[in-house]
Image (tube, rainbow, N blue to C red):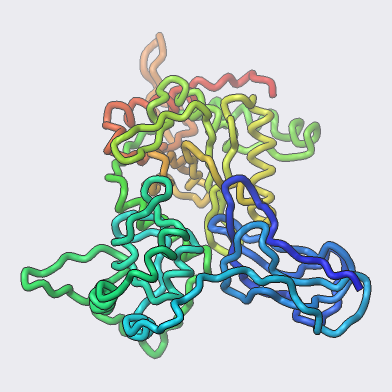
Amino acid sequence: MPEIEILMPKMGESVTEATIIKWVKNEGDSVKADETLVEIATDKVDSEIPAPSDGVLVKKLCKEGDVIPVGKPIAMLSSGATVAATAKPSTPVQESKKPATPQPVKINVAAHAEPVSRFSSTGKFYSPLVRSIAHKEGISVVELEAISGSGKEGRVTKNDILAYLPNRGSNGAKHVTQTVSVEQERPVQVKTNGSVPQPKPLVVGPNDEVIEMDRMRKLIADHMVMSKHTSPHVTSFVEADVTNMVLWREKIKSSFEKREGEKITFTPVFIEAVVKAIKDMPMINVSVDGTRIIRHKDINIGMAVALPSGNLIVPVIRTADQKNLLGLTKSVNDLANRARNNKLVPDDTTGGTFTLTNVGSFGNVMGTPIINQPQVAILATGAIKKKPVVIETPQGDMIGIRHMMFLSLSYDHRVVDGALGGTFIRKVADYLEAFDINRNV
């Protein structure tokens, strides 16, 4: 019977590999067309690989936890028949070859090396494939830091680490000693006598529950620590009178839902105001590359979405400046729905140049969000509350009940000073306060 190679699919321009998370089917299992064979994950989103036709899973060519490049075979499927899993598989995914003669340093490393994080304490990024090779070969994070990278921005590539392996020699043993004493997850200060202080072990009480972080939570944790290490964060706040915006939405939300078949929220209005402010002050729409500032022509707005699992993901509305309010509303609803139903593709979460997070959806009046690297600013919108406010009129000041909200902007003080950050957030508030209550959408 014909056999079909199941390949690691291409999942977007920015994705070159994915990790095997879970095999749903075992060797010898019958499968139907479009039935899930295996669950995979990239650095951004999880996904599934379905069977292309009815058949039997003859052979798995990789195991759970393996990092497989796009286009490489991961399994063999016997199409259209029930057969035993005896077919000879095609060439499995190649792994790095170890030297024929065992090196003493590798024996020592294997006992001590810990998995390498995506970002080192100095902010260096390591791809899943590089981290996998480092773990298998017993290369510590300290040793990995010393490898000269040939990739973009000095990143260590697969070829760099494979070229390094045969030449580890006595230097490897030096790094083994360091691996035992150096904490990988956060930078530490070295004492004057050269020893490194060790963190005190956490005591778990008899009534405590230990919960292991899932894969996404670990990625979020790494990214947040890296961001705080990379960017000196400053947060500015303003309070905005959004009464017109609130009354406008209340007036049109029923007719909009009846006409468009979906709800309109405040999020697309916030994004529209952010886009207008970015056009006024484009130096907020930048990234930092060493000592270079990269100013982005496109305005791609990321929006933080809370998932049912409790984790967070940030899908991106690309070229948001080219969409009207109706287009932004449909984009917001589409990305939010697909995020909560695990239907995003990797490209949906890449390319953002500025991020919005609506902390007000949880009843919070304000927040100090962490910058989504490599961006330089993130805006948090707080809960909208009715308040007595002094209103200036030609007839004099008066007290009125208004819908008020706080906006908070965290920005990278390496390139965004207080004048730019403070003026930008004030500009966003001005656009929200000037919202036309009679606007059509």
